[in-house]
Image 1 (cartoon, rainbow, N blue to C red):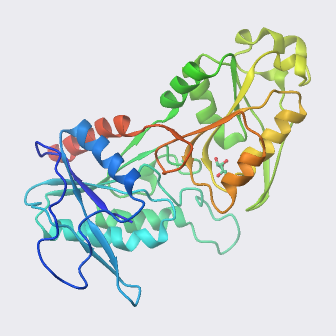
Image 2 (image 1 turned 180 degrees about the vertical axis):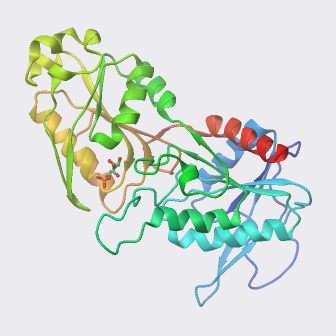
Amino acid sequence: MPEAALLPDGATLREAPADPGPGANDPAPGPCPGTEALVALCRGLAAGLGGEVALAGLHRFPDGEAGVRLVHDLAGRDVVLAVHLHDPDPKLLPLAFLADLCRDLGARRVVLCAPYLPYMRQDARFRPGEAITSASFARVVSRYVDGLVTVDPHLHRHPTLDAIYAVPSRVVAAAPLLAAWIASRVPRPVVVGPDEESAQWARAVAEGAGAPWLVLTKVRRGDHAVEVSRPDLAGLAGLAAAPEARAGGQASAAGWGDRTPVLVDDIVSTAGTVVRTLERLRAEGARPAVVAAVHAVFAGDGWARLQAAGPAEVVTTTTIPHATNGIDVAPALAPALADLLAALGRA
Ligand code: R5P
């Protein structure tokens, strides 16, 4: 839910004032429980943008309708709505209300900062009659904001966000952040992408970390059922960096040498993909793999299933709050927001 709005052109970091008056049905002006990560994101963005933080309140009326409230002077200001948009459905309407409220209160521009952009995986009509919800979601969001900044949206069949979003956007790449983390924490890594769609991230991360990389083949048979292929170490990209793999031919413990596989993916949802890949790598003689993912969706019991699969370590970015968050994206988001706001100012 959009509990926070960020004002980038103020001078100081200042919390929204205490509730100025009574009102039994008024949303609380402070953060709702569990929003510490969102407040931390806003503070990180404010620090990078030289802005201030204003916290909006979300109230659920007894009948389930939403009310939003923001006690702040927005006249002539640019507003960044920072929102963690996993589990998006209950948040979308409050987000629209908050964007409208910002304009009602005099905001000049309203830009969405959604570090995780949902609905991007439904990017084609996979079965007759299916909705292409990535495009529908984009149309709704584009109606309410002037621009969008996100981290590694799942662009596969849509070439760019411009293909579906009617407002300008900036995309922050998490690969350099993941690569730096791997380079500093994992000795002799081999970057492994579980499927063709992960190849773009696996390659970028491997190149940034100076590591060899390979991509497996995945067949998805349902929401919770996936199969992954055997790794072909003979075809390992960046072979010169892994000479032991050259002699290995078929995957084997000898083929892995003393390398640690680092499983890289953009989204971990049910965790079926990473669990099957961990099992496959283990069966092929690899030591326990590190998992480095961008978006910690962890639907249902996904996190428990991943833990049970015995990874050496799991790290994710702060695009979605989770216990595995170890890579902060706020420092990379702030310049992208500044660039987008500057471009909107010139338009
Ligand atoms: C798909 O192409 C994505 O890159 C991820 O591999 C996928 O979304 C992971 O989903 P799950 O965790 O449910 O297997």
